[in-house]
Length: 433
Image (cartoon, one colour):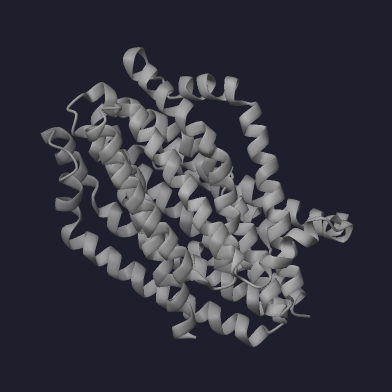
């Protein structure tokens, strides 16, 4: 079991960190031009695109779950059908986004309150990058399908290759050709297209994928029962993402109400939390795949064994991360700002960078269980209940200031895990009856 978990989790962790470097490379390269307006335009444009696309990340999660379940049952035909349906949904969503392009970009950028030259540069970035949204959506499905088949090394190789290409193109277009913001956006667009090509080749080498095109032309692939299961899964994952984004928005708004220094400090702490989450997400990916396989095979023993093992490995990793940030967190966090007030505020609240991975790790693993087993409605309900608790706790902990805000955010993840723990036994009994 240990070997199976690490074979999925470790490449997933490296892949997640490589993905995070995508945005950092853009900011670093444009920063070499020494123009804050250009850097601000890239930041706003990139955040708009990621906000727009990240809500559709359910395409990857649902594909992982359904592919792993089919693999657990040993039915390659079902894996091929899952691929065909997933790509069809991605193309449908992509066409819808392209149709909304004239409205989505100006309205979306307005939400980020960018003005003047920054807004113009952000519009330049978004107009170039927007066309790549379709490739991003299809890549989610192809990546999820490969993960569901335990092809993590392939996913890792594609991700690292796309990132290296992205960095080279960034340097060539921005520093070589002087294309500035348009160069950054073009580099991202082309690397996403190259990633799509590499994933298509990789998926095409898998035996079930060769049936996907044929199945796409068969009426049975699009039967209401199969499509209904896919859309219910995607609907629940979409709701869960929106609820999580709401919690993040409330965290940002509450920090902003305490002034620009606290807002900047909280932004740094949140980025450190996201880095931790990307690492622990590797174990969530392992749980998704192994849960899907055990549910597909109807193996209750394997289900409980992999859950205990994933909780142990993820929990140990979370404790190590927490200890690292407990020892070095204040120095790491403060290094992100040269403003003495912001640096002092970060040091004051850096303890929460050590608390959050421990507070959140169980909910991450349980997310993997509920996605892998297609218990996504229960996951969305537990998320909604935890969000209501966060809103309440945020008010109750207000006298503690920013410490109270981070306490409420930490308990939000604890509440999620508690709700999932209450629901899990009943769901498992019904599934394995």
